[in-house]
Every structure is written in C-alpha cells, then in structure tokens.
Length: 94
Image (cartoon, rainbow, N blue to C red; front, side):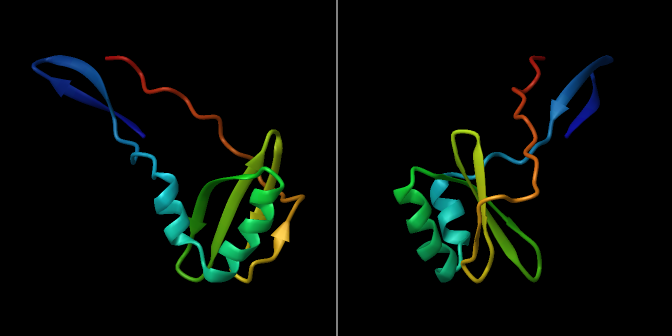
C-alpha cells in the first residue's frame, strides 16, 4: 500500500507493503498434510509461492511455469484452481 507523506513541505510516497516472506517462512506455515502433498508437486517441478492463511484454514499456492495448483489443509491438490494472481510491481522510486 502506498501512502502520501508530507516531508519538509514536500509530498512524497511511502511504500508500506509488508516485505515478502522467504521460502522457509512459507514452508513453516504448511500443515503436515500440505507438506506431503507438496512433495508430490515438487517432483513435477512446482515451486511453493506462498501460503494464504485465515483464522480457520490455510491454502498453499504453487506454480510451475504458467500452471497454478493449490493445496488445502487436508493435503488435497487442486490442479485447476479458480484464482488469479496479482502481478508484482516494483516499488516506486522516490
């Protein structure tokens, strides 16, 4: 999220996005069932992108080239998920 900040009378933009988690941090967020399921995906060339958590569930998102797959809490893999990823934009230069 970007906010405008008044700095010494000049208007500038401050990037307040949370820094990206490292792969190990995503791995630590997986359930045991998700980890076993991801081993299957990794053998097919998938990479773990991130884990989306809510208070009651978590969903792991993996990618191989342009193909996405999700893994639910129970370790069930969906090779045709109904999700769209946002494009990652570089931070604005100040």
